[in-house]
Amino acid sequence: MAKHIWLCADDYGISPSVNAAIRDLIVRGRLNATSVMMVTPSLNAAETSALKELNASGKRVAIGLHVTLTAPFRPLSTGFHPLEHGRFLPLPQLFRSAVFRRQQPDLLKAEVVHQLQAFIAAFGEPPDFIDGHQHVQLAPQVRDAVIEVAAQLAPRAWVRQCGRVRTRLSDPKGLVLDFLSGGFRARAARGGVRTNPAFAGTYDFRPGADFAALFPGFLDALPADGLVMCHPGFVDAELERLDPLTTLREKEYAYLAGDAFPALLADRGLSLT
Image 1: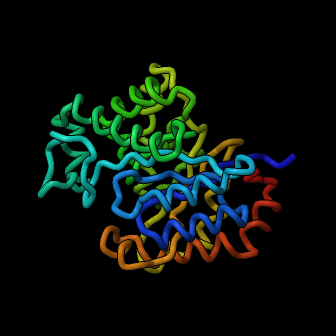
Image 2: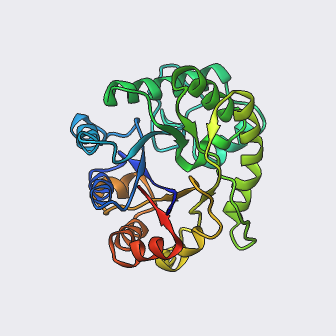
């Protein structure tokens, strides 16, 4: 029997063209999970309905909450701080303030609650899983808020940890995520919250990155129910306004929509179903 894995497209909601690309891959059977950003201007009733409809005749895709706490996005809760010009802090500043425990735990928890409640209002049920935009769920203080909210309001959901099966010294981002995930897994276990057994998909988002060449390495030694993160999409003006990750999304989409990807899964004895 083929071994089941999760292939999760992050950032549903960031722009209409990214949303369309993710839905297309789900219909093709090339994704089995996507996580939704509830704070984006482009996430409206039509976009959530189009995603929900893909599960109307049976569960085709797991839909998660992509907790978002970094610029250029704005909080859903009132009174959240610190902010810059009404927006969340950039990622480096958020992590620095969390490491030095300068975030306000009650405000962090309130914001995560607001995002989760917005998800439930849009989709009619709690998320299947919870992760974080730019891996914010792993940051000190933030992880406490995410795990507490998951345990209280979405007890059947699992939360994403980013510890890998194999570490690569050539992947500094992955090494940092490995380190942070140790504490995250321990905190989740204490809170009675499930996590994914393994994680893959990090790479340097430089313009010349070859996703097709990198992807097979993501599957090396991946256990059953291990998770691979991806960011497929089409570029539009809204994406360019909000995020520096643009044309690489189209490269990821092209590979996942092509013939090499399902052939690789079959060769490795892996399945998304």
